[in-house]
Length: 244
Image 1 (cartoon, rainbow, N blue to C red):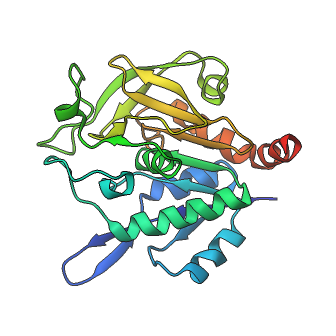
Image 2: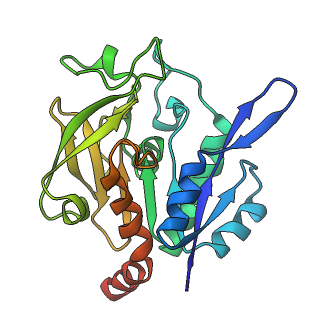
Image 3: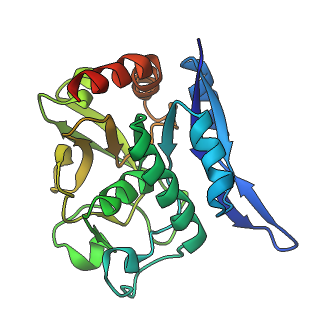
């Protein structure tokens, strides 16, 4: 039986109207991996969002705008880019309810960062002004430029089970995890020390990655992540139940 995968979209100001948008690759890759994508609007109404949470079998939190730093008790860095308080509220609520229900959660880029904040961690608001000796993870002047680098994947992790010890990934972010939340372990890093993946160590499947697997044209192996996540939702949930 196909699983319903909740994916919150984001808001985009188009001048005459504000639209709900999402990269269509997410829907396609979820479908190709055997899931049914359920796109969740950015409307902060708890009873409305509860309907989605009760419908879905897993939650994917995707990339996008910077996360409001007040969520981890910091003022804005001068290089902070645009934020979306409504998106923060919606996705934190969805995350809270998904954790309560113990459904599998997969965070991508901003999604991983939000998971880390939700559980008590924080971020570098801008790695270039707050870290030394980091290489280019994004281009400030041209957002269409995409860089690539290797990540080292740690053994005894789900990511290692999928890809082995290393992977070439795309990179277009200027924020990154600083303090890792309690009960999470780092499962991959870039050569400059930037955290590229985390996994929850308690009784729920929660995994986050910094790179963007929704672009399989950047690396055809990215499909393995969606195949693993969606193909194993039932067994992941069952394994969690057994640990209780």
